[in-house]
Length: 487
Image (cartoon, rainbow, N blue to C red; front, side, top):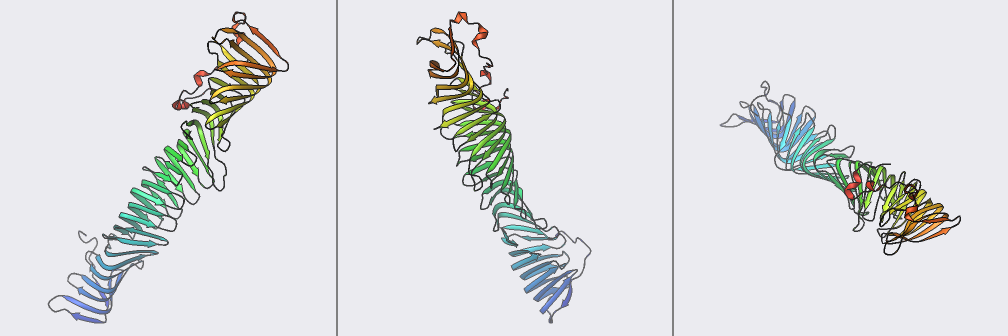
């Protein structure tokens, strides 16, 4: 409003039932069915005061303005300056543009800037959406609102609360800046910057975003949520927690499909299963988490490629791992190796049964091999087609070997003096353990056993075929699961 933005044009009186010259001023009072035109904008009211020298007028009662046959404005009192092409609206102000309705008590409108402004509380309605703010602007040429201070958006699908919101009705897109909360039936989103596509029901946040419901919560550097399809994806420093199943998933990229109960993380992906005081930490190239929904009745964690895990009583690595919580079983596939109670276990596949957060038993399928360092020197070794190892309070108690069983064991007295190195084979075997040493061995069918004095058994004969002690690969703590593994 610093001056005329275009060549001056005159206000024209198109109609009035009565004209009265006002004594002592240049004003003309217009009464009844007043119609005033300025360029392509038409003004209607019950009465008005027209100031010819100032090229302006004041309108009263049932005021209606039509701008370019596209925008309609209503109020009870209006002041209009024809030179500045600027209007002020007072009391019961309404502005209609297509299916958009703005209501407030005071508004200004700059025709040159196509800009409407209300400084004191306004309510905008469009379709099934209602937007409320303390301050707002509207550019009718851009079809764009700017709302400030205590902004609230309400629709049947969601509610939004923010301090700054830009809403373009032409493309049905909202941008928000500052602390923002979006609430729907499924979850709540919070962030400080982003946008919302109202027709697609899709939100994007890229500053301190978080999405959560009663049992799940996810943080990241940026996040997109598609409510229609129940899909969310998060990028960079992502963390998701499920308090119902006590699972934390982390990675640089995470997707969640909430309707089918499925999510995955990749790029530095890892999962923490924190059931009780002793947590299970798992890392892999990609982590999959299946949680229970109406379409999915089981909860499980799957790691693929370069899987490594750590728990105080067991550590391991493999190429594929599945943890099914329904039966508390960890299934290791493709080059698995497990360390438990100072024993190293390998095989074509390994299943671990967990009871009350401790190992109950381990099953090794195909090329099963157990190596345990002797308490003094050497290695106790068991080999066979199938092995079942039983644990008690985290300690290895009994090993059953089925199919072409072989063993090399260092037998000792109670004072740890060496009795000899026992080399044996049988169809099946059973070993009882005590204090990490072999206490008793039982052989079944096709038994061949020799006890050698240490000096009589060559170094190369002290190892079963396929012996590979991999202690240096064993994760030492929860942070060690991220180092590269060897196959």
